[in-house]
Each structure stands twice: as C-alpha cells, then as structure tokens.
Amino acid sequence: MKLLIDTELFLFRAAAACEVEVEWAPDEWTYLCRHGDAKAAFQEIVGELMEMAPDHQPVMVFGGPTNFRYGIFPGYKSNRKKHKKPAGFRALADWVLTAAAGRGWETHVLPEVEGDDVLGLAAGPGDIVASDDKDMLTLPGILLRNGEVLEISDAQADRIFFQQALTGDATDGYPGCPGIGPVKAERLLDLCTTPAEMWAAVLGAYRKAGKSDHFALQMARCARILRPGEYDHDAKAPILWMPPQ
Image: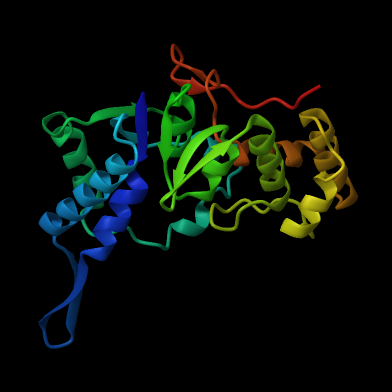
C-alpha cells in the first residue's frame, strides 16, 4: 500500500517557511530561500506523514509542466500569475526527484495533468492520499488531511464534486455558476440521490443564470480531479469527464 504525498503543496509550504527578506545594500531588498533549511523542513513533514501511515510506502507525486485545464477554460489559474513561488522552487522539486531513491521514496509524475490528478489516478484500494487541498475531498478513498484520516465514499466525493462544479473556485480562477455559493449549492443538491440527478440540478442552475450547457461542462471539467481510469497512458493525456446519463 502507498502513501501518495502531494509533494508540491508540502514542498511549497516548507520553502515558504524558510524564505527571508535580505537587504543587500541600503534600499536594495530581495527574498532569499535557504534550500538547506527548506529540504530539512520538507523531510520533517514527510516524516510526520509517514508516522501517521507507517505501513505505507511514501510516493512523491508531481504533475507535469502543462495542464489540460488551460485548454478547457482559458481563465483557469490566470489569477495566479501574479503570485510568486518561493525562490528556486523548481530546483527544490528537482532535488526531490533526484534524492528520492536514497531516502526510500518512490516518485510518480504524469504529463498534461496537475499533481492533484496524479494523486487521484494513482490511488488504489488501501492507499492513502496525503494532502491538505480541499479539492482532494472530491476523491473517494482514504485522505490524510490536516493530520486527520478521512474515509470518503463514492457518494460523498460525487456530492462535493458537483458542489464545486456549481460554486467554482476563485483560487483556481474558474467562476462557477453566477449567484451560487456553497449554501445554495448544497440546497440544490439536497434532493438528489444519483450523479445523474445532481448533474441535472447543476445544468438547471446554469440555465437559470443564463449560462450555456457548454459553460457548465467547462466548469465541471475544471472541478473534476481525475480518478482511476480517467487517463490515457498511451496518448499521455487525460480522459475528459463526461456527464452521467
């Protein structure tokens, strides 16, 4: 069994904690990330995760440099361009990939998808996904989140996925249905018992808001974290989510 670790999330957290401001000369300031400290902080995080799942093999999970969602909705994550990563973050990610074997870590990378998708695609029975990202709540299985182990059923995962398709995600830059927040989304889905009924409720909300079925599908595909079987390994591309009939 595997402990699938959201490497970029925890590495970002470790690096950001080790970044400091430096004044090299009067009125000349830069940010400095001490990679030795960041590496140590990351390894401490991994150690804590392994202590909570001692019978599982740690796997460092990464997404590829490109992401299929940019082709689904042009505004996807466009708001993140102004947010910088910690200094030398790419070098830290490369360090994880090269240092993994010597530390007993496996690595898993797939092109054209995000790390979140790789976590969802790789998770099998008994595996644990370690991530604090709320998007992981849309995946059925075992999730280690904020120090707590959650078991998410298929029905729970589907429900949260359709809620996300309605509300969108400002952090990820896709807007969802106009006028629909978390409370309204829950109310719309309260009487639904199957994925087909939930999708019908989603479509109804978008139509009422004057949006097309195509726009609703774009939002759902942005919200969908890929699950096992939703990736074509020969083509090295995701299999896009299709609405239930």
